[in-house]
Length: 221
Image (cartoon, rainbow, N blue to C red; front, side):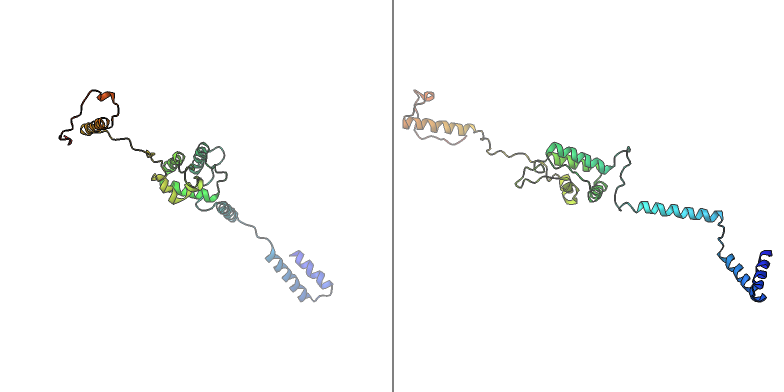
């Protein structure tokens, strides 16, 4: 109060009307109280800290695409997608196929969907089938070879599992001759003997033997 009175006395001494001087000081006091910083309670501070932590968590989660499998930290066990990529790369090196150099987000999403639909063992089995398939290794009329994108596609993946690209047994160009029955063998021998007798072809097997050309029954028995 002493400070306010001193201000009023200074204004009066400067020639300001006493009533007006009192109003000026009162308005200044009210304005200063309104603009003075308010002291925050401990509860308000805790709420502000909680809101900041929540906002930070949401920002970090937004950095991952929906459906993407989180990458495994260094030193932890590999994810299912990483196992598939490693298995395919090893198979490709052994089979002369294209080794994937970049595992894009699109490839990871596709592989993750195949794993969710069919299971990790089925995906690894499909990779082994590709490695055993002559067609997938380029032995076809176009020289086409399978790659990681071929494994990622839903339609081709099912075809691999169903054995569409498995090797087929090689067909023999000529069938082996069928064994002759005893009756057919007799007819063959008789025909050979007649040919040799009629045309004079030598045959030590039938030397000194005669052939009976009389009517007979040559049907098979």
